Image 1 (cartoon, rainbow, N blue to C red):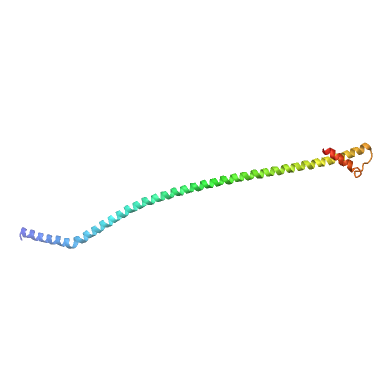
Image 2: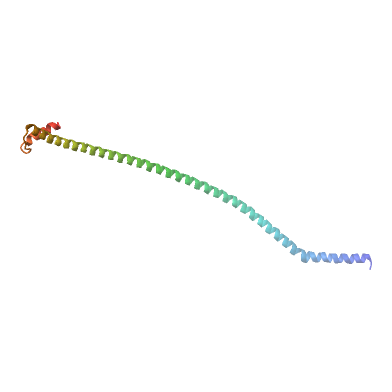
Length: 158
C-alpha cells in the first residue's frame, strides 16, 4: 500500500471517529457541562440572593436592637421617674408623720407640765397647812378648813 492510500484510509478512519464522537460522545459531555454551568450559575445566584437577604436581615436586626435599646431606655427613665415620685411621696408622708409626732409630744409635754403644777400646788398647800399647823402648834383639821384650803390653793394658782 502506498502512503497516499494509507493517508486516505487514516483520514476516513479519523473522520469516522470524529463523526462517531460528535454523534454519541460529544452531546452527553456538552449536556453535562451545560448542566454543571447551570448549577454553578444557580449556586452563584443563590449565594448573591443569600448575601442580599443577609444584609437585609442585618438591617432588621440592627433596627430591632435600636428599638429595644430605645424601649429599654424609656422603661428605665419611667422607672426612675416613678422611683422619684415614690421617694417624694414617702418624704412628704414622713414629714407629716414627724409633725404629728412632734405635735403629740408637745401636747403630752404640756399635759405633764399641767399635772406637775397641780401636784406641786397640792404639795405646797399641804406644806402650807403643815407649816401653819406648826406655827399654831395645834392640829388643823383639813375637812373643817376646806374652804380656807381651796382659797389658799386658788391664790397659789393665780
